[in-house]
Amino acid sequence: MENKKCACPHCAARKKEEKASEEFSLAVLVSLVPMLVFTLFGQVGLF
Figure 1 (cartoon, rainbow, N blue to C red):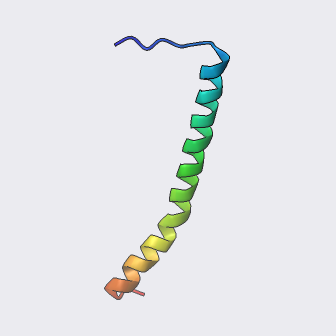
Figure 2: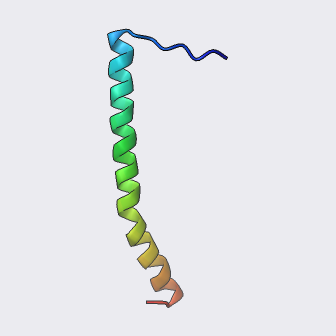
């Protein structure tokens, strides 16, 4: 399937919003990893 790039303002705005959403999701994931690790290790008895 061909991957065509659209140059219209609507597609450019949507791409920008998707990138911002992806960055926010990654930031939330990275910020939750320490809490999950401490919780897991605490339940296992390592902390």
